[in-house]
Length: 297
Image (cartoon, rainbow, N blue to C red; front, side, top):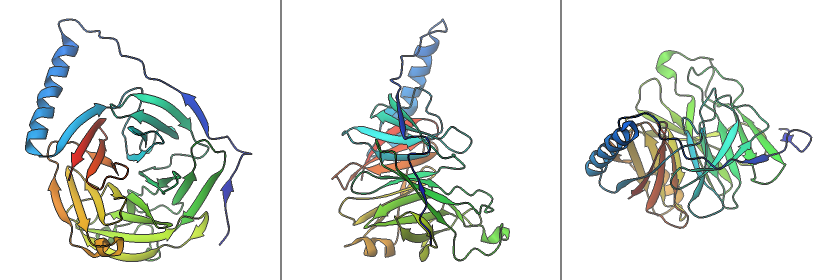
């Protein structure tokens, strides 16, 4: 194992303040008003269909295809990022989706899919999107907001022997991760059978690693986001328009629990999810379409 650091000799973790500007209300004949009215009706239908779900904002200022979500330093603010093919930028937003800051990071966005976060505010950018199950360059980047030091974790799945494997075995895409107790937990997106999310664990320290395969969860869908409550007793996994809740007396017990499915019908392509700090029942969810939701378990 060798430690790998991308330090201050590379581009610094540069913050570029980018307060979003109000968009012009062009397009005569009430075009914007009609759009707002339509969105309001859609929100009402979605919220009525999903008790506990409430639309709180919409991403603006160039934030496209939100794929991960994490808490920022100030209450009511978040970090998010875009999917593969977009710039390697970390966006800081408020609860309404307004852009506050942009951080250009010194490593490529090969396929960023999620953000995990430790109890000290360190972010882990999960560059493990693997749609075709062919990647040999899977990585996780340690980022401390305001710091020049960037750490890199390189890993490979111990049970993947072919690149790609047969179509029936393509379960090595990862779009969901969380941090707990000094370790990062990866949840795969089952592109073969849409029925099983494999759970891997690895250290949060920089270097080359081989994750441990811990479990296989029965999930009727493709997992796109994950987080754990502050008390460690509740794990939540996102899928498209669905939420799966695993609960137990401890984190280890929750990992073994049968997932409880909650419908998020009408919410869109749900991708990012994070618990409110020190609140084990309130979740924030982002979608690729740019909607921000609050959900009460």
